[in-house]
Amino acid sequence: MRPVLISGVQPTGKLHIGNYLGALKNFVDLQNSGRYECYFFIADLHALTQTPNSKDLSRNILNLAIDFLATGLNPDKSVIFQQSQIKFVQELKWILSTLTPVSELLRMTAFKEKVLQPLKYSEREKITKEKFEKIIEKSNFGLAEYPVLMAADILLYDAQFVPVGEDQLQHLEFTRTLARKFNKKFGKILIEPKPLLTDVPRLMSLDDPTKKMSKSQPSGCLFLDDSPKEIYKKLQKAVTDSGKEIKYDQKNKPAISNLIKIYQVLSGQTVKNIENKFKNKGYGDFKRDLAKIVVKYLAPFQKKKKQLSGQQSKIKKIIEAGNKKANQKVEKKMEIIKKKVGLIF
Ligand code: ADP
Ligand code: TRP
Image: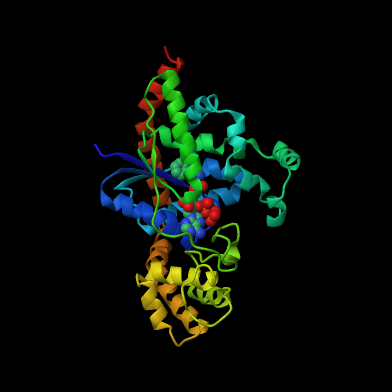
């Protein structure tokens, strides 16, 4: 039997190349390795913590399903499903939440970042304990509970491997701790999962190379759906450093280094090659060439996405079939868990 691997992505907006290289591309490679029993899901319950309106949420769920398929996730090889359709996950979340001290949740980095998001960076850094407590009094409870739901997502499937970005490592450690706590109290039935990190570096924003490329700052993103015109325009406007040289120097030239990194990952060329190619050329030439590479790289994805966008009922069927398989996978496990806890006797 192959080990189970699971991961989820939140349907919170269009995907950018950071999401693709840092998450989805890795999912597809892991799926195609044939080494794992793979489960990939749309984390719609987690997206609810951002309090989206219902139209946006539904559109984003469908769009993410299309993105999953257009990037190469294959329902014949992986179970592709929607988190909210697996009712057992919420049952397990409840049991796990009773083993979780509230203080542990309030200390999570992702929680702090989310509740402090409305503040300016400078204000976030010097926030007092009193002010932080005032803010969290008003934050929605789902934001605090977020890691418990994520732990349930993973533990319910007996997953041994979870491909995630670095920002999710703390949540995974929390999941491992919860599994240990449960096992100690009720008997050893939950598996402690291990993270699988990509070797793709974190891509930074085109607007500001000190911040990561993130959906929450759309102007700094290259989206997978961007047209060639948008890609050229965004790269032309991308910030650069002082000097004219196309040289990888993370410390002194962070902006051009980020663009070289994108060039390197998408073209497969080495940094040395790229530097040599643009030795006597300027930022303009480099950015035009990079735009060409991005457009070419995204073309197959965009073509497939266009095809799939006209096939909504087929997509819905794929997800429904995935939901059914995922439910079948976890039903027995939930029964065992409930027996151990004493809910079924
Ligand atoms: P965003 O900040 O754009 O909302 P998410 O937090 O939803 O991104 O992340 C979804 C996945 O994409 C995660 O696995 C995360 O590690 C990865 N990811 C997000 N931004 C980047 C980036 N700039 N570079 C590489 N990977 C990223
Ligand atoms: N929290 C993850 C993110 O924002 C999404 C997620 C939810 C997830 N449940 C998960 C990832 C379970 C891996 C396993 O990227």
